[in-house]
Each structure stands twice: as structure tokens, then as C-alpha cells.
Length: 558
Image (cartoon, rainbow, N blue to C red; front, top):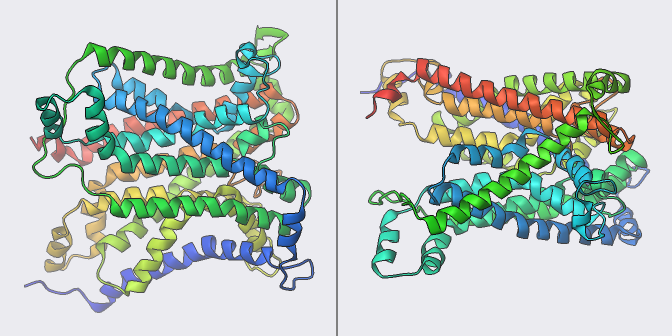
């Protein structure tokens, strides 16, 4: 018979979960509520819909909204097929160095989206190496925005589609072969139906990313208006926070709509690999493998070319007139521009985000999944709060933080313009993917662990420390790496929150580009990429060492 723990021990997880809900509400819901209130108040603080009428009458706003939607649709239409074919080549063909192709496909995640914008200016700008390829069209505008956004959104779609194609029932392919189905028919009737939910999710993620992307149109968009840049202009350029709130709400609507559809699609998804399924193993086929290898080679070359051009620009004295290689942009350019400290600020933000965000996310997920029954309303509220950040663009969150934390009546006003508020904003902005990672790891554990602990009168927290945490160590390390890299590369979530002393590196690139300092901007981008790559390498080594020490049992499962 299981001996129950003291009542205080059973109530403590519920109290801690309530505290987590209060924290998420404070740093997510209240800023969004402040954004909503700011949009329906006039300059005197009275309720009014006048700002909406002014927005509708403002010349160019309707054009910006339309441009945002059609560019996002075009980016989605280009990115998803490119990523799907790349993922298909990695998983469904017999290619050499498949791990290398996958790493290159995800390489855009190592730097901010501004890296692609800078590189495409150097490739296709007025003095670009390949400007003739555009046939006289200018890269400054929708052409450049689409190209750079496809590059930046590609790895996000690739991650989803790799998961969608990773599981397949080999019996279906054997049946198709036995019935004499052609390659195209087998692809259309077996492969696509199994991956359709992944395709829909990838399309919605890319669409939402494109709608909310700010750095790319700011750097390479020229005079082409989009909503994300209009938010920046209203808040930073004109200090019109009310108008900025209106534009931010308009920016929020299509993103929330996309993720609402994605949630509905996921609920309808059914398992594609049953208990009786036979995992699909591709067989060598030169007619399929060689074209796909060529495709991967071309796409990987293009992606490395983008990163390579950004790094090359940081080493050239004065593009394109003096191509002498130099480190001046690192030694003097960054120091004289006063933004070398920005890289250090970003390192501090990234380290603090990983150190504080990782235990917060994992512990909250553990309270939800592995502790006793609690009020259903509390669990539902925490799950909703954990899922909401994925549908909130960084610019929208940033304006909400301005309106909420910059208010003189707010007792937390002292947080504004500090590293602390930037760490909090980053954790909240990237909370949902980390939460889903933790929940997935925790759901894979048998609940008998807690039952045995209760029978031995061992505290749940001791079980967490001695059993749950070591078993879930890969997920914990992945959450830490994810938070660090995204804290180094994000622009939109922090562009409204910094001061002269807390300027982050990714925002410094934006400021350098505005000042025409492309060399130092490329140098800063290169520093971010190298920092993210180094941390990813350390993560891989640390994961290997820790798993060998704390999860040696995995090596004896066979």
C-alpha cells in the first residue's frame, strides 16, 4: 500500500505552479493587456477609437498591410517546397554525409536575420558581385526581402519537415511497389499524405515568421513599406506609442490566426507509425539519389555563400573599391563605433537567459506533468500561457513591455532599460518551443517513478533531482542551447528595450547599417555567428560527456 506524503508536501507543487502562472501573467499577459489598452486610449487617457480611425486614414498603411501579407505568402510558397525537398533528400535518399547536409541547412540559425540581408546586398546590390543576375531589378525592396527571408526562414521549416519525414511505415512502400505504382504515384499517395500535417505546420510557421520579421525589411527593404517597419518608425522615429500599438495589434492578428490553425491541425493529426509498423529504410537508387545530391549541394553552397559573404565583408577594407583583407573592422571599427561592448552585452544576456530560463521552463513543465492533481483551471491557464508566446511577434511583445514597464505608476518601472528586462523578454519570447521540448521529454517517463517514491516516502523533489532530471538531461541541455543562441541572434524582441549601456549585438548591427558602416556591421554579425557556433560545439561535447556519465544505462539497452 502506498503511504501518502504529508499534506504540506502535496500542496507545495500547486503553490509553485500558481507562482509560475503569476510570473507568466505578469511578464506576458499584462504587457499585452497594456498594448490593447494603449490602442483604445487617446492622448488624455480617455477611451477612444480615434486612433483606429486615424490609422485607417493614414496614407500608406493599407499598402504596408497588403505588402506584408503578399510577401509572407510568397516567402511561404518558396520556402516550404525548398525545405521539403531538402528534408526528403536527407531522410528518404541514400546520400553521403547526411549529417553535414543537415547542419548546413540549419546554419542560418547561428546568426541574426540581418546576416542574410547584409550578404544579399553584397551579392546583388548596386555594387554586388552578381547584380547582373537580377536582370536590372533592384535588390532593395520586395526582391531582397523575399530572398533574405527565405534564407532566414528555411531552417525553421526544415526542422519541422525533418520530423515529419523521419517516421514512415515501410509496409506502405512495399505494398506500393508490389502493386507496380510509379515513383510519382507512390510519392503522391504515400509520402505526401503522411507528411501533410508537417507541411501545414511548416507553412504556418514560415508565414508567421515572415509577417513578424523586422530586421530584414529594415536593412534591405528600401522604401518598400511593411507593417513591422511601420511599428519601428512609429515608436522609435516618431515616439507615437498609441499608433505603434495599433500597428502592433494589426501585426499580431495574422500570426495568432496562423497558430490557431496550426493548433487545430495538430489536434487532428494521427500517428503515422503504429506498433505494427516497419520503419522505412531507403534503398540506393542512382536515378533518385544523384539528382537529390546535386540539389543538396547547390542549396548548401548557396547557404554557405550567404554566411561566407557576410564574413568576407567583415575582412575587406572598403567594399568594393579596396578588397585588401584586414582586421580593422574588428580591431578599430567596432571599438570606435562603441559597440564592441554590445557583443559582451549579448553574451551576458544569452548566458543569463540560459541559466535562468532553462530551470524555469523545465520546472514549470515538471509541475504540470509530474505532480499531483490540482485545480483544472490552473493547469489549463498555465498551458495556455505557455503556448501563447509562440504567436506573439517580438515587436509586439517589445511595445507591450514599453507601455507596461515604462509606466511611472508601475512598481517594476526600475526594470526598464536594464539587462534584467531584456533577459525576461527573451525567455518569454522563446518560451513555447522550450516548454514543448520539456513536456515531450517528461511525457516519455513512466509515472511509476513517482509512485515508487511515494511508497518509500521520498519527496517528489528528491525524485526530480535524482531520477527525472538525469533522465531528461538531453532535453535540458537542448533548451539551454536554444535559449542561448536565440538570445544572441534576436532583434525584434529587444529593439525597444535597450539603453546606451545595454545595447545588444544584434541591434547594434541594425544601428551600424543605418549609419552606413557595413564593414563593422558584418564584423558584429560574424562575431555572433562564431559565438553561436562555438556554443553549439560546446553543447555537443558537453552532451556527449554528461550522457556518458549520467546515462550510461543507455549503452546497455540492446
